[in-house]
Image (cartoon, helix red, strand yellow):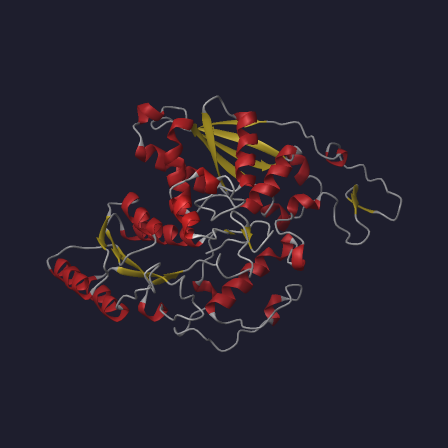
Length: 431
């Protein structure tokens, strides 16, 4: 396998890339063009997929101005958090009114084409933060640390819908001390002609049926144009109808909770899938205790964000040598953190002394085992200290994987990356 190829080879949306020599790895870390320019793909938070870059360029071409950049997110809420991060890093007069939020919704005539309510809930949508290009490092920082950026799959789907006129824009311009201003930008529908007219209720020939006057496939009875509602490629037959999305998420949560161990047919009523004997180490754990996120990093970021909202602005503890973005999250969001890079017994002694002297902490974040040193912290003692001094324990067990490492009995939250394991090809993201 040569430099820059995807792993596995020729896998769409793969998150792993071939760096076959040590020199390649070093040059990649140093940003050497010899390596970077040959990379077909890379890990999503460090390598912006070409599909995402292309979609951002198309949005800027239509809605941007000279010397502006765009960063894409799956929802307005995440885009708003990015905008807030921009304002936290810059003086308001420096940013001014140059920061804009652009929400792209399914074009109204697409909704009129007969989508059911459930399908409409998962129709293509993306939110863009448009910013002065000189502030690109801030955008990159938010993208990398939070893991909340748009996926290459969503970018591919939405870009096609955008080019075909199936998305309309709602632009939000925010000033630090001014009320939100919203403008609606109507785009001409350039898509198939059937979406450009009202339902005519006419029957069609050639064995085709109609739904509200629109042509459907004779084999499936579904509306033409369903390519705009398909996120997952056909390969290996792993595509799912969007009406099954809720069941698929429930199946994932049950499997993670340990209450579902067999293969299931999502076409069947899900109530018939009775939970089996619990295989996790905590009694009473159910799918209601499992929350899904776009990436593993997003699960860490949102765990920290949730704790800040729940307990207030307290410092966190980063225990052991962590994956770098965990430390950056704790440093950049909230009042900072206490960093114990060695994760040793003497570090726990120091922490105990601080707590005994009256210092209070939000939560202790650690990895079990650590990445890349594979060092495991003393979770039993950490749990004891947390109970005595009332701070949360959040454990990232991605390296060990929750199928092999049972740490929940010692933690308040366990976070994990599903990107590494859930598809078998490392071509989906999740946490």
